Amino acid sequence: MTRKISRTLVATVAACLLAFSSLGHAQAVDETPSALAMTGDAIFVRPALLATTIVGSAVYLVSLPFSLLGGNADEAGEVLVMGPAKATFVRCLGCTRTGKKPETVQTSN
Image 1 (cartoon, rainbow, N blue to C red):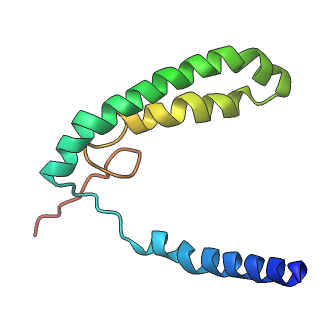
Image 2 (spheres, rainbow, N blue to C red):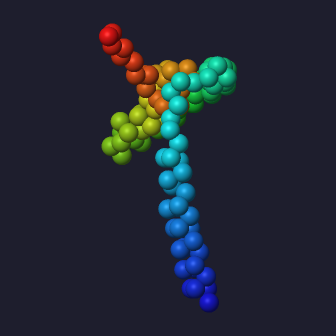
Image 3 (cartoon, helix red, strand yellow):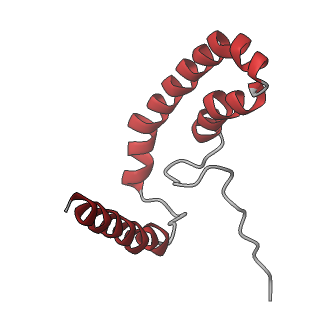
């Protein structure tokens, strides 16, 4: 009886994961943010990401001896420091993707 319930639960979870995974990729990324998005990003998101960068740097420094012994200091630095720093400083105001906004090329006719 419990084996049947377990199989049913696993099948249901797998079906939900497969069905809902495409919803996140179906949305197009808007790279022309509104004034509200820019304001919210400047007032709320950037300070939180700056705090995350500072805390991540502190955690990286504390864990550095252990990550050096484990051989993953570069990976720890990328995840704890560089990821939040890129999201904080190398992202256009109000954009959702990290990185510089691609320049639009205009051709003259």
